[in-house]
Image 1 (tube, rainbow, N blue to C red):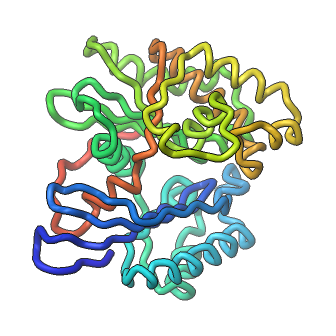
Image 2 (cartoon, rainbow, N blue to C red; image 1 turned 90 degrees about the vertical axis):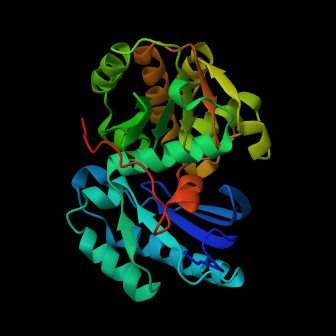
Length: 314
């Protein structure tokens, strides 16, 4: 990540998130406060987590992802960023051959990749949500439905509680968990939240949740401004999940608001969101475009002090 000028001055930063399903880039300007001005975003479906259940990153999946990173390097240089913060999540942290992938990125792109734990992923996502959405921290529960895992984070007595579940859109597509099996995974999180009864606002991030917002609005052209802050009720999510589950993959690809490359995993993703809402007993979810990239851009730099997340994993 590039730093310009004295401490506290403005800085142009680059962040890359290597996820299970996609690899995303954000270039931004951090202003004092801190406040993030987004200059450029990119997302490519690289499906690094292909064959996630096998526990090994496939050579073709690694090659796709590295090719994307090399392209991102060119974009970053145009903005004067030579050292972006590059992180990886579920697919890489679980892979038995993750060292091979990290070596490949180092060789081809010249970058060191920081592999985030599930709680770290949740905490930076939470910080991103708070930076981009008008919501009270003590009333907010953030859920990040990814390709390989789902993270939850909330505050308890002013300290973050982070939970990471092996529940993701790619993983559930490959392993075909039932709704009851998914609910059993989410139940411990619901039990923890129930110990501290209060009004809670559920905020969702990640490609699954933003896609559901786009589908519900039938957005032929994706519009982040219409997705950010959009609210979906449980019955609307459940209906979308049913439509997606009963449609063929070709029918899904034609649905307004759905990126064709996500057509195979979106039914599982929608079922995860519906299950989370049911088990947590929340009537609606607020969608946030601000997520882990924003949190890392603002707080992931060396020397920035943040509270350490609770490193417990269910």
